Length: 183
DNA sequence: TAAGTGATCTCT
DNA sequence: GAGATCACTTAA
Image (tube, rainbow, N blue to C red):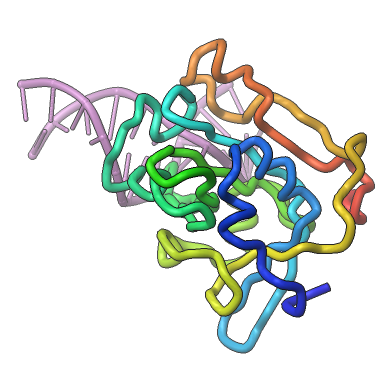
């Protein structure tokens, strides 16, 4: 259960973002820095889905230098800087030309989107790279997927600016406490 | 509950 | 160029 498992492919990510977000729970995030390789179970994700999604950076189909990545190849890493101090790690999903991504919000041992990027030393240097084995960061299967009743769905965090409808969408996914040794 | 921190985007 | 905003965390 480590770098030996095959990496999740662009095909895995070329699906609706909410499905990808759900399926990433219990998967492994692998980080290589020099000779060190670490493996981390994903415990929390959020989906940002398409031009209609007012919580998304690409809401309204907005294409800027920053959001351009979200329109690109599924499986590409989207890493951006926010609040003057935090890096956020996302993976692009869906067809090229359709802006969508999944925010990785938590891994076992580092719950919280900024905490995990700090723990794994993830920065904008990874922005725009394809997540694949041999790059600095990629994903693998990690045993059998969690049971459906081990997964919680809630509204997304910190997206009140999106208005009542879109901030309430149940696009946040997390493993129930106790699953995969999570406390 | 509020401060911290700086890139990014939208107006002039 | 100026001003607002921000997919968060920490310390109180």
